[in-house]
Amino acid sequence: TTLLPWMCNEHGDWGHVNYPKCPTHNGYNKYFVFYADSLHLLSLANFVNNLPDSVYFFIYTFRTGNMQQWPEETYQAFEILSSNLLQLRTVANDNPYVFFCKKGDWLSAQEAYGTNPHDTVNFYATIATNFTSGKVSSTLIGPATSWKTLHWLQYPIENPTSDSVHLELKAYKSNSDSITAIPFLSTSQYDINDLYNYVDVTTYPYLRLNFLTKDDSLKTPSQLKRWQVTYDEAPETAINPTKGFLFYKDTLQEGDVFKFAVATENVSRYDMDSLLVKYWVQDKNNQIISLPNSYCKLRKHPSGDVLIDTITFNTTGLAGLNHIWYEVNPVDTNTGKYAQLEQYHFNNIAEKPFYVSSDRTNPLLDVTFDNIHILNGDIVSAKPYILVTLKDENKFLALNDTSLFGLYISNKTTGTENRIYFNNPELQYTLAQLPKNSFKIEYRPILADGKFQLRIQAKDVSNNESGDVDYRIDFEVINKATVTNVYNYPNPFSTSTRFVFTLTGSEIPDDFRIQIFTITGKFIREIGLNELGNVHVGNNITQFAWDGTDMYGDKLANGVYFFKVIARLNSETIEHRATDADKFFKQGVGKMYI
Image (cartoon, rainbow, N blue to C red; front, side, top):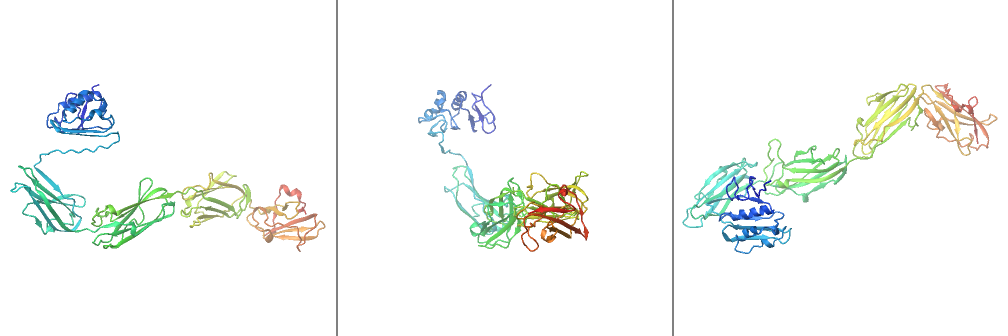
């Protein structure tokens, strides 16, 4: 492999060890990069030795120059360029080093170096030039609302002079497109008092002056004494939070309403027309999110006026780190230009980060049959009132969408499952209202005899499910109205006992009484439906607890007592439903012990 010692920095041509010129440029006026290994450093010595006189030579190290490993030939090649003893031999390998000279001019040689690898070396050199002409350009002038006058003055260094001098005027649009409005103003035209006749300010609100001078003989440029353009300035507004600022908070819960406002002040002497403002959000993925009412026009904005505009928006879907952006006098979407001419625009944009916490808490699902939390496999009414409630702790993301639910009824006898849609006439629902945030479903089916399963899927607006698995409850329906024997629990008892029984059908008996007797048949107490509390179709254990007192409130003596139940629906006796507990009853009469 041939190792090549240098490369032209401009176009990448590689040279050879003994050929120090760039083949393409065929000269020494380009930069070259050398690599600090022994072969290349010998090539560097050849390169320096072969440079013709009057060529400028400049070298500096990058990262490391390996100064202590240079061959003797390379040291000597550099030392003959300078009338002063160079420090090449003493510079550490990794320390920065700079050398400059004009070949053949010993006094031009200069060097600079650091004493440790992290030093910064500043190097300056002056090179005499041979130009016969030159140009001085002004800064960009404007923006203006009207052009008035132009004045300039120059003077030559020598007198008499043969300098050629003139002034050029260029006009610029807001998008930086330009034309030469006045190509040549000679020294006989130092003043223009009607500049507006030369430049249309509505099209060209900016100007630039170019001073051109030429001296072929002495090469001494004429000097610019002054130049001046008078014009009416454009107005200038700037965002100024010290005049008004509202930032709701930097961390919000998803669904909360974000509020932001900041003041802008007309800091110029000129009035502005109705001011356009624009808002947008940059989300966690750096996507631009448009906001409602994000592009609007405010009132007029006179000199010294302060405008404060407020924007509010819901943070749903903005979980994560976001940035609110606010721009005054933005580009008009109709024209593609700034809505109003203004001196500067960099001070018209504000940005503020804010964080939206996502909702990670599961909603709570509650299901009752006829206001009872049934057990799996319980008997329920053939016309049950099924109440489904979904509650969410989030006070901002309302449960107001039926797609958050999936309700299904399975007939376990036939093995079929049907979805209950929200347009079902047997179903009514109430959307959640904030801040309570509770969605309610009321389902009143009419069911045939059989065993069924209710399955419910539920989630909140943030897709948090109510549980790891669907809610499921099995139940049985018996349309025929029946009642089991009523037994008391506990039995025996000392302080109180409750009554346990099962009802089937779809209605509550309109007459339901428990009558208690002594062993001699004496009637001592009757407990009616109004005392028993919430009786429902299905398994019942009464809220009422009998304390062992008679109809007068007197405590009964310890011993055995009999009781029987009267149950009627629509004036007809309800049929008895047989159970395993019937063996404790004789002809519908039960026995209790105090």
